[in-house]
Length: 183
Image 1 (cartoon, rainbow, N blue to C red):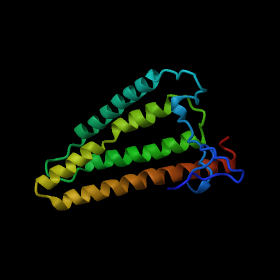
Image 2 (cartoon, one colour):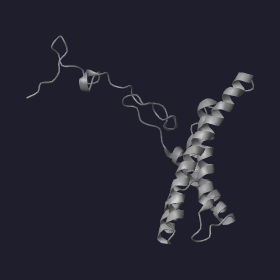
Image 3 (cartoon, one colour):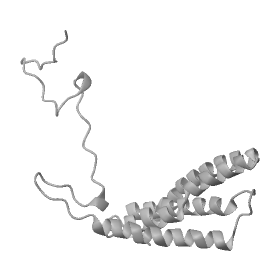
Image 4 (cartoon, rainbow, N blue to C red):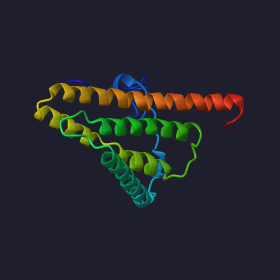
């Protein structure tokens, strides 16, 4: 039978100050700034209705823009889904730019900026569910090469787009600050 660990003075350790192997606990996770300030004990959270409304309005706008892209550039049945690939890559690049600007240039942007533009507009614009359906449709239609190409290219291009756009934006901000054109 094992016994709980004790401190040198024989008292049981405070569970808030230690965990396995008596290592210190990690610091608490920061509160998402879109959700408002951290609450004091007994304090009621502010309403999330404005955040939900911002996401819904932005999502409708982004989905409408994506739909427009598919109408202007339709993908014929059985062909490579270029429109959805481009939509997802452009949306991921825009997310990289947005998040870099919000963290580097406008850290005190209004509370609803990120939910409206990021989760809403860009979340509604990008469509990884349609991407998955396109892959399945290509497999079912006897085009496994196109299906695997879509599967791999979309993920690789989307990750490269968000990372590259974020890096380029942060670099441009640093360069602008070094030259004195950005505060």
